[in-house]
Length: 65
Image (cartoon, rainbow, N blue to C red; front, side, top):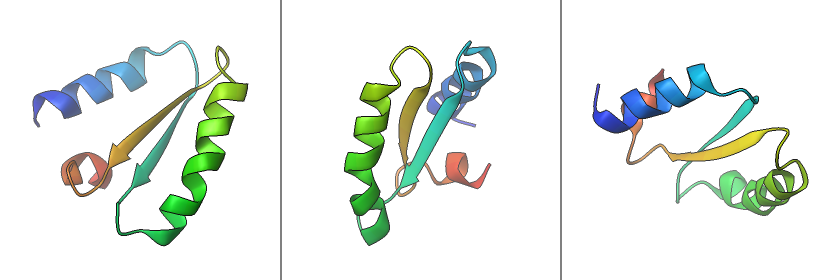
C-alpha cells in the first residue's frame, strides 16, 4: 500500500462527515458527465459531506479496494 492509499484510508476512517468518493478515469464518458454534478453537490453540501475524487488510472489499487 502506498502513502496515498494509507492517507486515503485513514481519512475515510477518521472523517466526521460522510465521504462520497468519485472513482473516475479520463477516458470515461459517464465520469465526465457526472463531474459537474458532483462539483455542485460538493459545493451545496459543504460542511455536511466530503466529496473526493480518485483517478482510477493513477490509483488502481485504491479503486480495487
